[in-house]
Length: 113
Length: 114
Image (cartoon, rainbow over all chains, first blue to last red; front, side):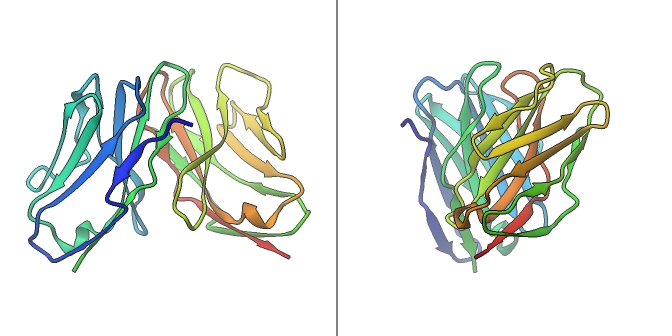
């Protein structure tokens, strides 16, 4: 089965460090989503891309977060500098077509000390 | 903005019994999609079932079925013959037409008692 691949699976780092999370969408999927899951806020959209162009990044703190799609096979989410409140599970999902569901990666669990 | 509400933070069910998880949503759209996702401790997000709003027939997938009440904006999930492997967080989600972002409820944690 085709899968969305996220790396790393887990990341522990100190406050102030740069964090980069990567996502390989399913081949042929033209839309990529980044969601963040926390106990307090639940699952919320950070940003999403279609055909590599950003459509909505209103959920991202602009001063420290950035999301890009260097090519169709790679999406990145960067945090610089990281803060303890960024600790969460970050999911990437991809999709295509009007009626198809999104497919999720296994997430990156980020812990900022 | 669309919102999704799951009013049951936790539920429990005896193995082999039936349980229903509730979900309500708010939207002004007439066409949309609704989903139930399962998240086990492994944290994978697994699609359980989906419903297109334009379809009147309730979706079913093996032991999982939904009760979709469009006028009431209600979308409950029924799990029949519950199994230990059904224990997980269950999220209800809404999506506008097209390949658009999901809006999630806060989730219901389901425990299955042997």
